[in-house]
Picture 1 (cartoon, rainbow over the protein chains, first blue to last red):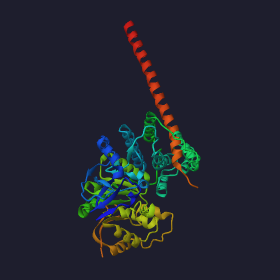
Picture 2 (cartoon, helix red, strand yellow):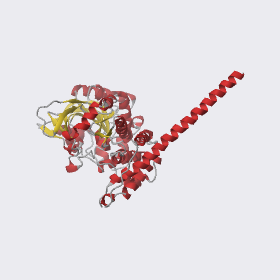
Picture 3 (cartoon, each protein chain N blue to C red):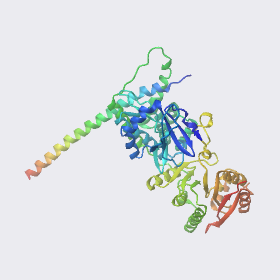
Picture 4 (tube, rainbow over the protein chains, first blue to last red):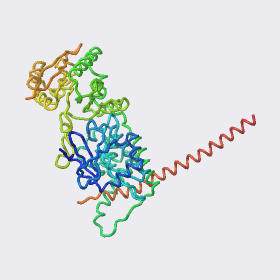
Length: 457
Length: 52
């Protein structure tokens, strides 16, 4: 049974479909020339060699639809993530991948015909283009057709993260085709140097000025750019993106481990317990909720599991990403507010999926998280247990009681209306949806870590 | 209002490409000048060395 991926409806060049849980890409006849050029010119080999483009295998088929030229089977991407879930470094690397591909393509007389951030995915810490059908022929003199999209999807959010506020990457969740440049320009308030001046402020002003040009009766003026200027432009954009760095940003959670209330012994004990539980559950896919810089995600990754490490703090996610980039571990750090996780968005609410529609985790780790959900967010324990049981098979969860100094801090500024928030109340709520496999106290602390298995009716 | 952001993106690219090309020209020019000075300096140094 062949199911077509909903998100691939825009591009007439081909279609993405799934068969027996394997992803295929159909290349249509109307795109055959470009596809052949990509493959035969040596561009494909170069891009794959440099880890910029996802590799694929030919998939010979006798039952091709009439519009199809061929079918390819791209290498598997462990988890599909979206730009509003990426940290600054992830968005920056995705931007650089896009620009480097565009730069290399020119040498082979090709270009990227789109520069959507959704075409980039992370495979073991490397940002790669997954849309093999994004290439077109370069016509000497024509400007880059995807330039506006590149500015909206990449430059605008990156500049806003650096010069205004790191949290503004979340605007990408509202504006699915990238940030409107006039809005980015307003929020930047003139900041961002020559890079922002050219690509955002002037760009926004000119777009506004020429917005009605399509309505004019006289022929539109064509603008031509010589090849060496075109190359200089792409090179200057690469340098501009490479120079973008976060400036002295520190968020509440960034230095959690440095300021945590664990003793060394408690820390070691926690590592032992998590390792033992992972060994028992043997998960293939682990989601680490509240992963911070991924300290415990690494235990799961070392056991051979693919890990998605979620945290609400963009700096913690950034640190984790930089660590993953250099170690090559199979961990994907993502920004996620667990009380408001990524929903399904886009056309018919089917274009970009909610995190739960993308994958099902074998095991969820929720360490030092429950007090944030139950106390900071007033979520009843029974509802938390119900939700976890819906989305995983095994659950490794740490209960942090009111005697713990972290919870005391949370309760210091609010009325204690959480009479159910006790160890007994926790165990009672979770026993409704889970079978307890093991529970162990964390040494030198008031905390307990549980291994649960979901009860399936 | 119907907006066509595409055309503005074409126009601005002419400006961006021009700035980038000037940048490259300035870079080439300054590196050539630096080279000339470097050559002169090495020549002078060599001459001084001989005098000694």
